[in-house]
Image (tube, rainbow, N blue to C red; front, side, top):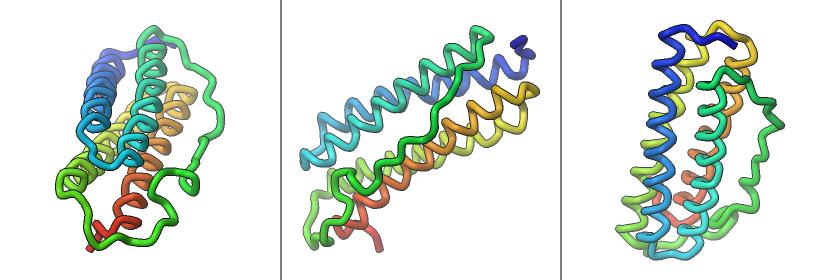
Length: 150
């Protein structure tokens, strides 16, 4: 696949976003007071690392084959547990910031999907965007299960 200048710039933006997500989730896993939340951050970090590898391949002009989305929301830490009335303000802050980050990253992918000329690249970016949305759902589900949603 031959990238246009605009596509190259957009991929560089996505690469930077993924690198920030990887760093943020790693730090947040260390800062989380609840071990289940730390595990959730590490799970999402692992997926962000996969996204970065995919973006790097796209930057090289290769459209990787994407497998189906592996949503595991029902088995994620915090899902299906009763809401707790007390929770760590620190963990709540980390979750809200992570959720805001996922919203932003998903919107960047949305823009890129419309800007790419190659159908395979658009499909790959769409696949990643869906996974970013699943990350947001996982974070929200944890918040809801722990009484952090109004």
